[in-house]
Picture: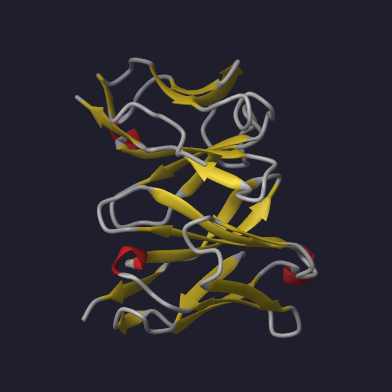
Length: 111
Length: 117
């Protein structure tokens, strides 16, 4: 099971919107609406931001939203803030014995 | 509140063994699915293993299958990862995480495993 493909880096100015893509296959992202997204600040544990493709856990800002089209899932951050600067990872359920696969990760920089 | 605390990491020689533990509190551990996830220094996240609430269903990443064993003790609210035949590429921070809605909704702080001679 290969890692899901994410852009290595995405940047934006404060207040702007950015979108991070997460491309898998018809066996993982394309087959299930079970993509999750995680934010990780340096030296910290990851934090769940989106689950089941588009749902936000309690306490996560509504500036974060998720969607999917075909084999590609996306995370959009609107109204970009300095605190959003972090690494972001997608993850998909695979339905196979390898169960879960993470994306390659995207570094978000706030200019 | 939910708390997950990993322990057992350290320095081990290639071919050696190590057992990680994760102590859970603040939720009903025996009803929860759990996973181990690792992150090599400067690299991305890699899912390692999953165990169902009863321990009857277990999955492994191809990279660790046959070498690592996940287990749990619901009476002790604890999750374990027995790692054998360790390789340099197993060097990573290992996180335990609660699996809810096919996502990892709570994570521990991680424990560092270094495999080096």
